[in-house]
Length: 163
Image (tube, rainbow, N blue to C red; front, top):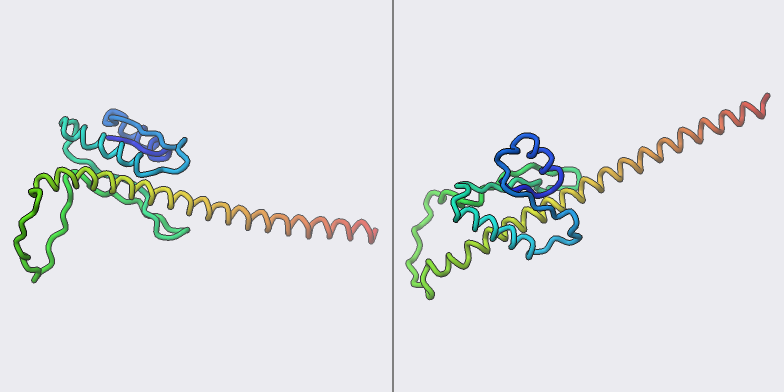
């Protein structure tokens, strides 16, 4: 099991400490780029080919809106292929150059890296949305507290004047 991110790291470390293979810390990286995801993707593929695990699943927070993020699990190895819709034709046969195996050998590692990159971006957007929402709530609460304290101060000042 690979771990990325502080919150996921803390939770998984408590529950699955024995199954954890490696922890990748990207907290110090200001802007996560494709090169980070590509390195992670290559590491996942290398460990899969070495037989360290048979299924790789990404767990990340999928961004829907500033106030809604959904925990998501996405299996990336082996790839989950959606079932064909009823009535879908078999399609025409095409010859590829280079052959299919060479194309897949090039595209599949890139696909793994793209899925990791997508998960990292979704997670980052979810984190920023949660921060934005928390800061908005904190600002609103601080404003309410200031209003209450101002009213309390004005009432006590008025009481002192009338005495």
